[in-house]
Image (cartoon, rainbow, N blue to C red; front, side):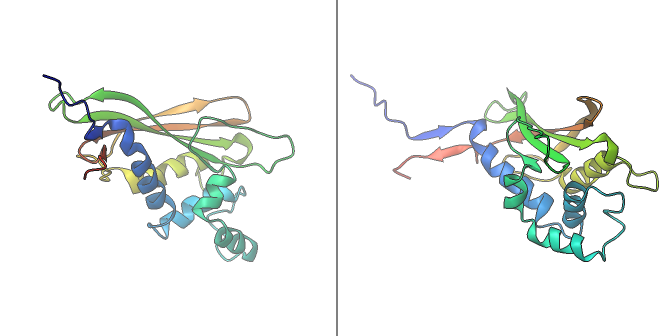
Length: 194
């Protein structure tokens, strides 16, 4: 007797990453005004008064033109671990989103755990934004404020696990935020029969 080897559903924790990335980026840069506008200011406008000077027409124009798609295209938000720093390019701040440490859930093997990392990198000459504020920590504050305890595609909520300093060289440094996530029933590709 032959067993039917047809695949009916594919289920994997890796499959929900694209949905989670979309939800995360929309939450950070589109749906959470005025906080998403301030986060965009911190990334796109590398001046000390980026948060304080909200009446500057050049800043307003630049931010209005800077959609989420353009932020990804121009490298402010990165979904791959590749950071090019061309010699004559404008100085930028970056958020690199990545997934790591996929493991079976301890209490329910149907679900998977993983970590979602946000590496926040800024040129060290532009860290100081006045009033004892530090650009990469301010960016981390907005990310944490908007995402901690947020529900993604799986079960449970996104929980901050840690934040570590990230030193690349004398010019580019920042912090790495790590969140724990649990994936579940949204992690599947339905069969053609469904």
